[in-house]
Length: 480
Image 1 (cartoon, helix red, strand yellow):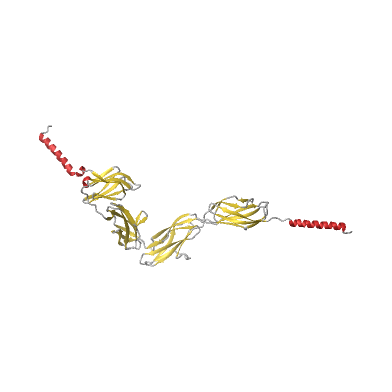
Image 2 (tube, helix red, strand yellow; image 1 turned 90 degrees about the vertical axis):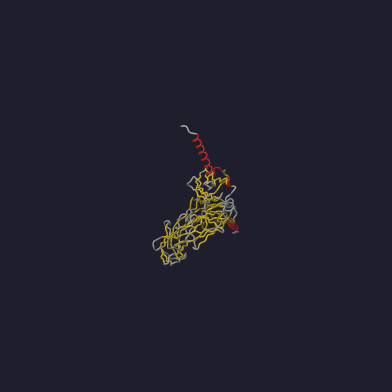
């Protein structure tokens, strides 16, 4: 089919017109991009360029960086950008993601703006902006709620903010990061950070809306908790819920029960989770001998009690968890968890029949040593005796070693000591030490060495010899 010259000219004109319209409709395509930020950004951080607020978020189950961009006169959009990809927001800003590190919660990005925006930059608002995505939460009385608060530093300088919170409820309020409480927060310039405000309500709080005010330097933001119902008639409080004690000791925990209702209530007392053969009792004080199975608490009042725990002597060292239970009149139970860490008590006694012994040169004698494991729960292992005697003395110990001596038992050792045969009569000291892997004890023994004297025997012999001589002389010469 042949086209007329008129048709060809018309087609050329249409193509030119479409190209012109495309250039007019896409001015951004004709612009070059100028990088404004090249580097790493943190998870949850916000940056402002060309009048756009750009927030970066990471989630564990996504392979993308979630980039939320908003600007006056434009619709807020969430762009999911993977590594090595880019996206632009209405020709105002372009974001390129080069790498994502979920271990450090960092994203390496390039944020660019059109080159023609450099000549007429969009003014950036200054100051500090506070936002909370969930400013109103519902809770039961006694619950803990968390408000995430984003602090946006729109100034061209880094800031360290002072944090505070208040309410007229008597609730415990604190800013937290993980499990740590904070009262100051550093936010770099043109960036944002999100911090949690932890609100611990009390069981005594009435139904209705309660206001909490968070203050960041001179800025403040209000949040609200609506208490839907009171979930218990009492609060159970323990100032110390974790203790360390030695086996064989009695352990006590202080407990306070507060009646949240307007009438007097009787609360039943019990405990569960204790191992077999453990004993517990509730008392009004540590020195009381009266065991309680229930207690009366007046309307709106409180009652202080003592929970005494007595583990058996044969218990093993370790950590033990149990729960004190307060049962309300309606049958509902309130539990308070406790932890007890038992440690073994190590002890040793060392005894002998006497501390002093008599000896003769070259003649052996025995010292009997009794070693008792006076500790609780722990055996004495590799038990043996060490001796320190003067030079030339010989010492033998039987038995040589005991592998294990359990608590409450006694091991007898016999120490055979032999002084030298040529020793001088005098007092000597021997030290005997009981040694184990856990503990040691020692004792000193005084040894008195005596040497037999032959002078009386010699004198007696001389006397007998003289007497015998006199008798012979008398017999021979006496009759003359």
